[in-house]
Structures are given as C-alpha cells and as structure tokens.
Length: 128
Image (tube, rainbow, N blue to C red):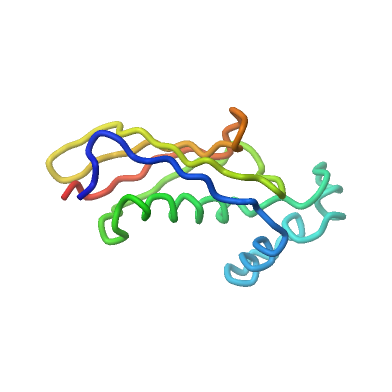
C-alpha cells in the first residue's frame, strides 16, 4: 500500500566513471561529454558529467522503492544542473495531490550535502 501522505527520501551514489560507461553502453548515449575529460573540458566542465537520464534512473529506483512498478502511471522531469563525478544524489518528494485513482508526487534530486537541485519533476502513481 502506498502512503498517501508522505514518501521516503533516498540517497544514491557515488556517481562513477564505470557507471557512466555502463550507462553509455546500455543506452547508446556515447556523447563524449560523458566519457572523455577532454571533451568535457572543451565544453567548460573540469571532467566528465553524468548522463541526465542516468540521474533519472536513480529517480526510477527511488520511486520503485516505495511504489510497485506496475503502479507508476507517468514521470516527468526537468534537468537543472549537471551531475559531476563523485556525486551522491538525494531524492525527495512530497505528495502534491491525491484523488480516488492516483496520487501525484513532486520530487527534487539534490546534490547531497547542498541545496543544488540537479533535477525536479513529478510522478503519478495509482493510489491503490
């Protein structure tokens, strides 16, 4: 049963080069910004940064830690900051609304130990 009033937070990480390489291989996202320090530096970053959808994969793991996968109806997000290597990401949410069929949870993913928001969005899940 899904708690209709609150959801737990979770921390994932650290983000490693191995994760970036594994995600690139699995997703086909071979953008050098995520795999080559030289390319990242040419783009203005000190080293590679994580794929945005890798961060969303952490969100998916977080959501399915408190909600069964079959209950997820939709997820949306907006990326607001790049995710550097070594990051620990804190996923937190608050229930925005509940109706007879579903609840909507607004979430933020922050860089652990700071108030830097990496991404934010919403997930809608079946209420039952």
